[in-house]
Length: 179
Image (cartoon, rainbow, N blue to C red; front, side):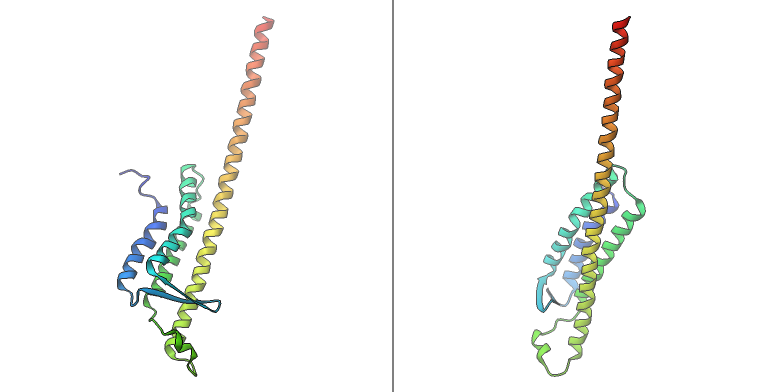
């Protein structure tokens, strides 16, 4: 089997798809309901999985490039992969086991225990989602910076080599003319 097919960064797209399918089949409801900034957000599990994959596409490509150019820091790479996978699993787990609630329950006098429990899990899921998005942005900036610095250093080295060859060639021609 080709080693390019067995890479750690493949966990970034396999986990949301595989665990998302399991969650979609086993959850209480087909729709994820979240409350953020005064608005209810309703999405299906396939839409949530697609959102995870969209956020992970650039870090996946950057992992791939850093590995191919031998610039990858093993600790940072694995930390990013494991944290990302853990956050995806945590968010899908929270949304799969929170019981569906009725939006109108919020208007009841006093707070129902089901609404309190749902609000707590909703806030935890949103905090993890913000952390997940922040982690992807931070890793993307880190990897892009590392790639750009490497490309600049390679261009500088190539330029120096070209200059050395140019001067060596002219020096050789000059000694041939004298002789």
